[in-house]
Length: 59
View 1 (spheres, rainbow, N blue to C red):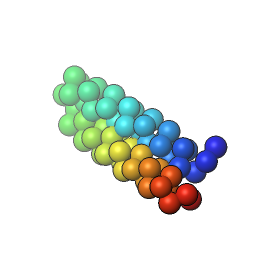
View 2 (cartoon, helix red, strand yellow; view 1 turned 180 degrees about the horizontal axis):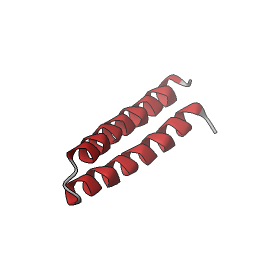
View 3 (cartoon, helix red, strand yellow; view 1 turned 45 degrees about the vertical axis):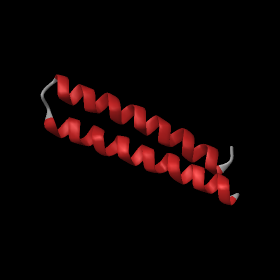
């Protein structure tokens, strides 16, 4: 698997995982879990963008 494709796939996985944690934190009234989910979701979005940049540059 190409590096760019791998980054995009992993990034999407982290976005989804982060969203689940965020919702679970809201439902259980756990601000730490909600914040952790938000952070992971943002990190996933960044990783997807890195994969897109790698694809453009051919890395």
